[in-house]
Length: 311
Image (cartoon, rainbow, N blue to C red; front, side):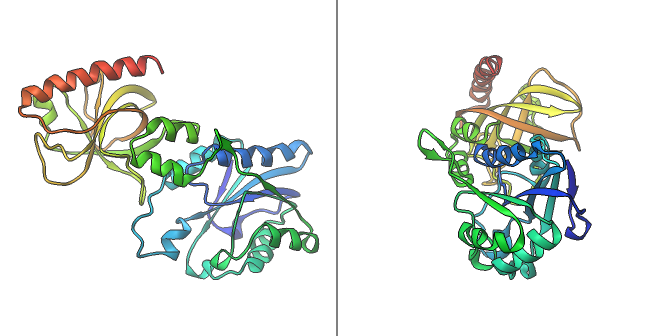
């Protein structure tokens, strides 16, 4: 997959088949659109193009709204889309000037002039342009004049529940990893750089890597203890992750993410770890003593090993 961060660097293609959206999560609903997009590449010269935006439009349109949390960093989104067999990914810088484009200007300047779109595939209830004024109906009316076809994909359901990035965020906020992973089609991921902590875990036999999570507004799941896998240096390890305030040993009200990597010893400071969330096993709690905490951590480890052995 070729990636472009500047619309002016996008090449002229003989027959671009295009879709556009934020694609936060690159979840199963998105994959329905991407599979349809790729299905039209059977003819020689047809190439699949995804247009997305950075930063997320809501960060520009609602700068004072701090509630938005994202399922993917930009690098994660690029990696996930590359796994889908897309030919070209255009990442348009989203700023206030771009946000002022009307739906017709978006069609004329982006879809037609810059991309040369021949077929456009969009998801159910897709809106675009200033104030989200553009719709499938606008595209359908404009397509004959500008020489492209347009197709709308219906909402994809699982047990009659429409998949959306919002529902995945809600599941993660509730610690419902099973639902989030089901809707995503993969295990929810976070990436973080290992930073120095107080090394309290070393003294009780459970050393942890303290993580500085990568990605503006990256969603961190509900506080609790999780079964995870940890990837770094081309290896994958089993791990137990704690998200919370560490009330037994270091409570200061600050939420931290730390992971104990099973059967590993070594210096991880400065390394980038990729964490894949498999299951949430319990709430975080305050213990009456360090010994009680150590006993619970051993119980957690045993349970997590059982969970990960069946994955």
